Length: 195
Image 1 (cartoon, rainbow, N blue to C red):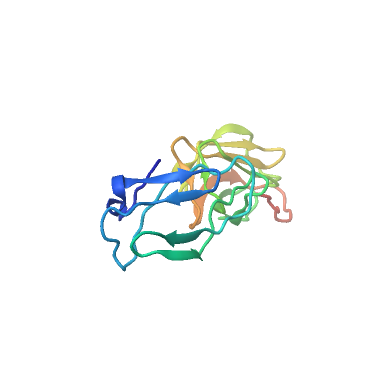
Image 2: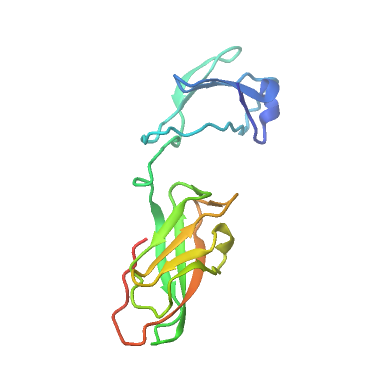
């Protein structure tokens, strides 16, 4: 059995659902009258270990008001590897393009799958700064608390950000994290970073 939660979990007998993994079937038994308005219940499952395309679920009912199976809207259980998960928003902005000036770089991120504790984001190609390599770069910005201190490698222009303990980089909104570098002393074309 799987525990169910959500706004209307009290409508489900024992607040649990019968789950059959092999067929992907979740059976909810109504404890009381199910209203004709929207009802919300949730159940937590673990995504597959191997990548797969999203699944479309169907729903049916039995008992006093039986209904045939109908396809539900939306899709679920898409599982990807690090290579197939992507960032739907990935951009870098800066506060200064003046030689030798302090420059705050801001990374704008929105993943297609939430990134969790220990997951890493690598930004490379930020070549030419005067900022020395450092194993613990102070981060700032609206969502800096989502990450441990950054790891900066000057010669490759690479910043590695690690999602902090008990944190998650969410889908559905853009997260912002910033750090400061010193711009190159000589004039040059802008970098084309890769995230």
